[in-house]
Length: 123
Image (cartoon, rainbow, N blue to C red; front, side, top):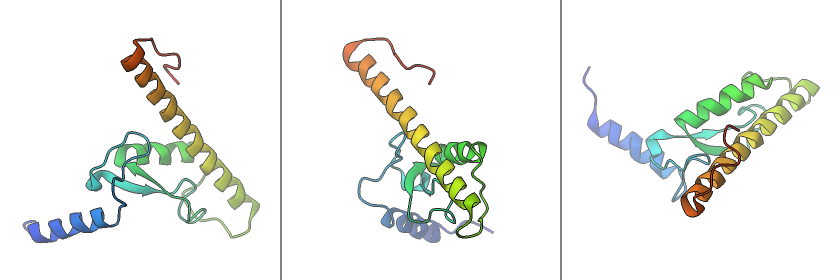
């Protein structure tokens, strides 16, 4: 079966329409709609209203970090302590990842503007 270019264009346009103007990855700033994905820090089931936009690479990185922190990708019973723990771990992991991205951006700006070596390299 050959690809349908009209259908591909419609899919691309629909993806772009769902994003706010100027939308980009919160980590790297990627803006191509086909590479952006809504990220739920604690999984959609645990924390549906909390989302952030990430490129595919940073979305995968966040998912792996969340799983490593003990936040399961599966739904847990509503109101359970396990669900609350997983949600806290997911949001905490998100904050760590965003903090690391901010430190890298500060290092890059410092190197570019001031010519200083990085103070947070390797974080």
